[in-house]
Image (cartoon, rainbow, N blue to C red; front, side, top):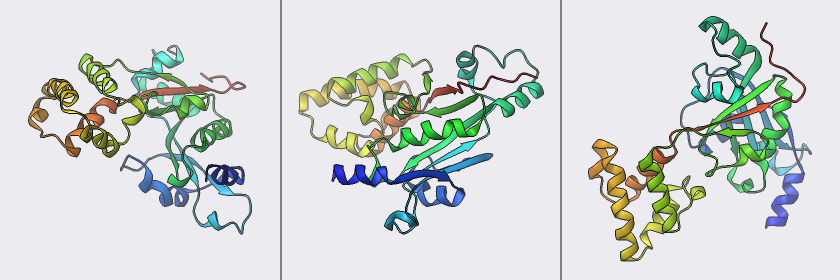
Length: 248
């Protein structure tokens, strides 16, 4: 199956797409809201028009205009856009930066590098000095870094670090955090002493989040905890090797 899937991947090409391509795959993305201020869409489609996969793209990437309020941008760019009045800053961002708003790969084709390929091969096509993205922490989903982007992570709260360490101790690692049901299945299989150890950390974590401290164990609580652990997205940036930021 792996060989067959990889052979299909070789038959795919990245072509200019539209929001119709995104709409066919949007249900597979973890966010429900739709991207706005769209500038470009690219889709992974078979090279042969008669291919049976032609009806729906295997993957899609959506580019949008940058959000002016991204705290880690100043650190990542060395303050290039700092010290400007709001109107000037916005104009320069719109001229120099594009943001990756969505990267979606149809589930049958995940795990063979298509997400990284979509990012890596389309960033130069945007023809701007900087491409950025916001995503869950790199340990959870490193495909943006594999595509050549550099990650800048926000400071992590102490109670989040402790919870992540406790989960790791019982065999739940960073890459597991995107699938609450799979994590819950692992929790359900833990032996009683291990479960008691983890429950102590869970209660401490929930107390730090106020109203949710009385949540009963189960999938809903697990989904809430994982959401909190990944809610502060890392910032990713890529600089075009041949284009410089234009400040005038």
